[in-house]
Length: 515
Image (cartoon, rainbow, N blue to C red; front, side):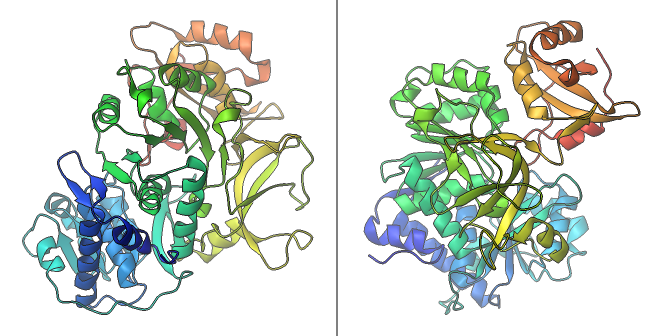
């Protein structure tokens, strides 16, 4: 069988190899690889019959369901570009995405279509709306799939196939432009170190608009595995799905894992859960220890990644005991550099900027040459001639054995009393107390210090803690320059962004008082 060269080949090759194997489940039904491959082709035909030209954009604004997957891969098979839109976004954010990348076709539900009525008139490039449960004045999904066969546009592996919108520290979300090759090599690289195989059942708990969420599809399809699509309301729903579906692989972000460790786990999950993987931020050591206690036979994979380069590093499970605070080493097909501001290589244990080079580097930001030039820059000539890499904006260090350690984001670092303080270091120390279920640290402008440190924390269930007690604990484990000047205790969960990460920017703009 030929090696896949385009994104949709992941499905067609699996359909040729194991047509009767299950590709997708949504908890109510299943779809074989043969059925999925046929539906993807029908979707591609429908899009082409609507006049969609090569490289034009198709936005998919749906929850996790079969049609979401079919629409994304159908657009890719047609030679067009899919834009997965997080279903949690409101109409204003959706309008920004539709306008920013000149979406031609929107695939959504009748319920979401009704919510978008006030903004669709502001999207002049939008030509067609397809609803999966037919709504008036839209094209029905069934009719889209009933269109006659059409020849797909010719595309190459370096052509654009997807735009993933990612939130930045400032401004509106930016569209990261990904090629067929980016997504395909990403799937191959991740599947290789996670050892994904046809017997795997992966839980898609993260949004499919998040690169790590979509990766559950690509790594599974490359391996011939099955993906269970989960739209959950409560963390308990994730635990139930792990047990019910006999999941073998779970990838999630630290806030979800922190919530899961506060719950009672079903007995025997680690009999089938082969691994759990972390992405989207450093896993607090206390959380990792609780997960390992609940899942003694499951392998932990601690990962670090950039939407701009898919995935960058991972820590092998055998290293989790020895160096649990490390983000590991470069994934296959990638090289990670740690550079000083002048472009020279940092020495061992010297902080510097993480720079990602290799074929997973994306094509930049859609319609934003200035921001692309800031992040995607040529490497110094002494490293490589005429090669563009991703400069992450993250400060890391590399130890003498070559393992990397995350220090903080340049745009999140707290500058106080002449020190650069990582908020994640404060948060991990506080979380280790066992007094809080989650917490967030950030800097607040201060005339004397530059910035003072504020902390917002949520107590663990059934436990009472006040700011004074938490500050007393902090004095025992943190140096004076890292101590919070204000601590706020709240009973409700901390806000998260659309990808499930703590919304540090929102929290830092809210009034914070000692309580």
